Length: 276
Image (cartoon, rainbow, N blue to C red; front, side):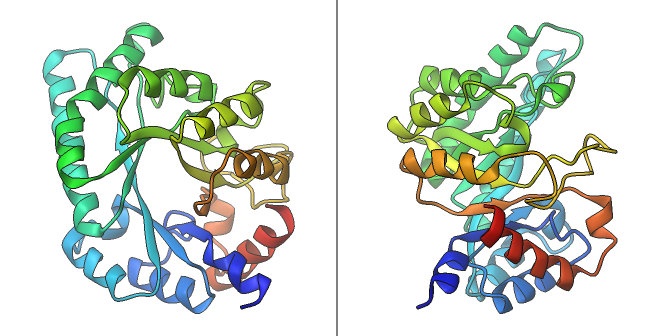
């Protein structure tokens, strides 16, 4: 096996990255390119359902790395919080149907209350999921988001906060997700990655780049090498922390979605070798 093939075996692409493709097309093209993993967004199987999607994935050579995404626990009322927990329980069952070992949690925030209150609701929500997660052996990965999303998308903005919450919950099924887009700016990042690795709850690693200038704070992520993030350095920190899982490419980009997706996939593979 060549180094190129070995590297691609540990490359995962999120279905949202090649959003114009159906799940069937993503599976076909990723596999044909030698990519080893796929992380599945819920929109990719919305019409066919998780059971059918799980069958398609099982019939492919790809390994399903995660289901994206659960979370959004903080709400202004108890009834809304209870509904969010039920929604996440359903997602745990869908992850099991897909064969996905992990759900990525975009934890949410409620702008009418303090961030600390939202973080407490996030922890309570995750703890409420543990009995079902344990019965189905599904891991829950807390993904800190960039502080620009602290209004509604996530009250967890740093890896330190995610690590603290993980350690407070004390379950082997709860860990953290490192996404360079959200965390590259944090001066404590290397130490916090090591902390997660030392405690064996570094569950996933996502890469892309931060374009300069960024034209859309949600849907203008760059391909690795297109921006200012030192992805190779962060990859080294993740590796040194003992992480041996997939490197996952997760790019939201109107610009790239409008391009030829086969050509884009070739660019992803090239950037993975050169800038990851």
